[in-house]
Image (cartoon, rainbow, N blue to C red; front, side, top):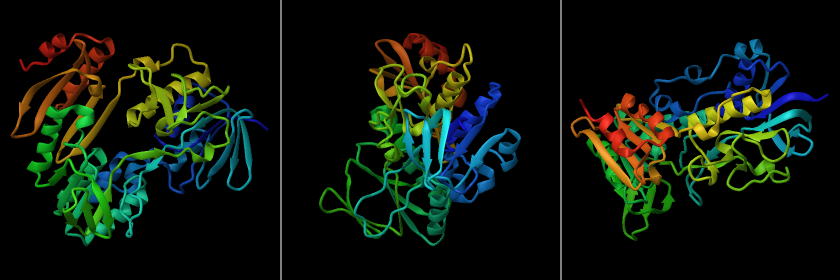
Length: 396
């Protein structure tokens, strides 16, 4: 028997894909496999509400169990795929069971990058159990050290300060997030940490972690902490695809429809490497909104929908809730050669920054400027002039 669609990974991409297929009227079988035992859940709250106790597992699940029954989606939890034969579109499970399908979608996501050679396990935040373990550790802690100043590290720092803890963030770059937003805006984001009482040590890497002791690469500095959290990005869960026949290079290589080169085999979400709409470079797009958009595109391709969404129209979007405010990043600020900062209020941390490349709008970053940031989506998509975008965004 050949199934309709098999989706490996009940991630935001996997669940979104199953839902979108049904919304498009796809009537064949949909099997959704996931190695975890919990109902599929959303990950952004893990470094925020799940740490502070404001969010329960029930709060962050995508759907209740009966949703999958009602939608005729065969959700199989605690089910691990260990091999894929892309030519035959056959998935082999840990139990030895084989499932062959008309379409197979790899959506196994990514796992947190862990600190190597540590004598005491550092905390990471990627799964719900990670958040529970870290929350338990924070209950008896006074001082927290966070390695890495990206969004996950910053959100953990913010949550820890909410709990009344002393926090130190160590970032190897000159400023947290400088490679994504540039030095000037990174300085504004650094102010958010400073104003919240978080100590940021930047421009120096961590050389060794021994229990609760961090030794820095400057050769003499050390940090003592009760809890150590590592936020150094994620690696794709793709090792099970070694003999699949797929091209795997920092993720499963796809075209702009999520197709892998094997008919009927797709990949979406954090495990997938799609071409950048602006540069053409094939890379992973590790954003919640990108995963949802890829799911919509793959579903459209499988269902044969006409006039479906196009990846070339997609605009990267990511947000982060820190210290009572929301930071948003839209488009590709890292491609810019010009940045304009508007409407900056140091007392609240509010700002809007618009980014241009060769005179055209390519990105926007803001804090507590939600509407103004999202208004730039159309202008980025249409590559309007930076001057035009700045004029339209100026406070009236």
